[in-house]
Length: 500
Image (cartoon, rainbow, N blue to C red):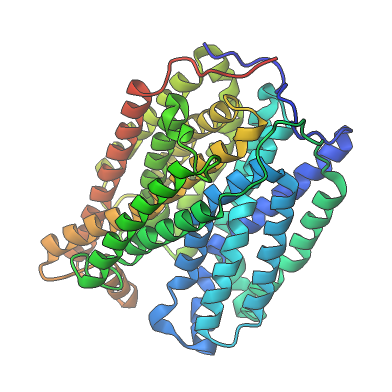
């Protein structure tokens, strides 16, 4: 069983001193997490107003893709920088960049400018996501980390669900530019709390080198950007077997080789090899990459299923999806009582094994069924994934010292984000393939659901949509089974936790 007692005694651990000061820092972290989560979803319902004002309908999807790509590819860079220079300067710089991007988005004069400024936002958002999670582990000893991580999970879940509703309200009753302007006072408050209340002690001599591997950072950024762009746009902007897709994947592989060469030659690489040489971290990275993959099934395809098959309004469909945001944080908060008894790995395996069974059960729901049935399934799924994700994050953070925690946390988040990007591409192709087989021709999920929204359609079309989503859920169950096998075969039974 994993040892879970005692505080992190590694020199240099961030402390705020008084409990009140730590509480102020935690409040700032929750505000920062809310901003990062909101801006990943808040734009979705304001697209008609934005396109009506700026034009650029053919490229509006980059409002989401540009932001998420920038967040994902910068995570490893910010993780290493926080280990080198400390969490506070990285978090402050990221918050300033995020707020600058928000202001520029509000002032955008064209769709091209808005997309570029969303990328600037994402460059700051990567610092917010990774550094917030790392600071949470710095501030709390191991036995208390589930509490703060559960709070952050709750903030992320609520903000992600509230984002589309808030975006629609602001775009409908004010102006779409307020979607970005509201970030300024909230972000300014979080920034002030961090500057005023977070004090990191000076590290002892012999700590991390201050020479930054900028060549490696640039190579990682370019490689991640090219490969993720190929996954995001493949099958959407151009066919998978087209020249643009093949060129991007080939370029990505070349850049990956460049990353390996550059990182092997520097003394302190931006993406160190120990992230993959240590069994615990490597296994968790792969398992959470599979989590990102399977999360696409409910987050992307369940709302479509609820509207097209169950006939629900968009708001009601959102409530079906939001069921898992109720159970996920609660399960995560209670997971400490489980992993203290059976260990991090076994707790995570219990959670992901249950999730695999629940995902397999979805295709066997009655057709067309009632809304409470998938909602109940999502409630149980959230509880299962809460048992899976949090023990792995807390476990990894507890196996490294201060000088490695930022890099380790960033690698975990990077793999999860990359899994989601790959999942959108893979499951989109699966759904469209099933639709084409059921309906004939080159049918795809987007065109079919738009036709269903425009008016009544035959039962055969709705059944085709249901079959497509069922296939996606079977694929998600396969990703969960893969995560289970990774933990069973690669992860050590007992995580090498650092204790007093």
